[in-house]
Length: 187
Ligand code: AMP
Image (cartoon, rainbow, N blue to C red; front, side, top):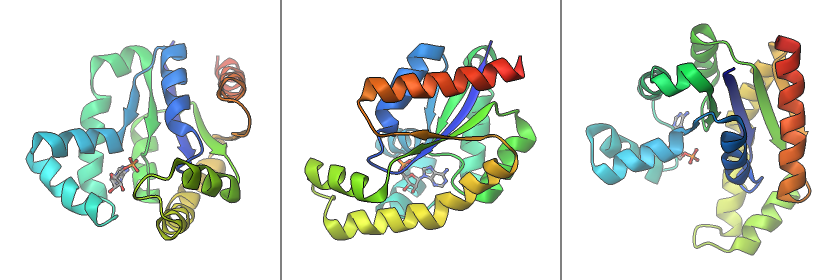
């Protein structure tokens, strides 16, 4: 049975790792809009060129552009068969509204890790763009952008908050338990 889920989490919350685990556990494609846009930018397609400029400024693509990209991806046969794990989309309330108007979502997950913990993790990683200022900016942007979208799914009774603290294996087990519970309710 297809599983259709959306996952939210701050940068540094372990979302990337968990998406890979969940994608293989449920056999559902991991659809990351950020990955798709970076691939398009590397290929130099018209979308990629537009995305590159916006990504470099830390902005968001216009809703209608990203909606076109996502709609096209969700129309692929693997999605019909196995569902999807959406990562990085929706980022705005209009994107979320457009999504739920098109497809039934089983569960929206907020992979929750306190701000001070993700800040420490990102500083520990010490990538070039992980300066304390850049990290604070991304955390503030997440709060401003994503929290209203999370609230939107909460309002639809689709949201489950999963504690992202602990070993990757522990977190995966928690996520699978939360998703399975929701799928059982749906069945
Ligand atoms: P991410 O890897 O998810 O952080 O995405 C990288 C960049 O791609 C973001 O900073 C945005 O510029 C763009 N992007 C990804 N997903 C979306 C989206 N749903 N809406 C608008 N822009 C997006």
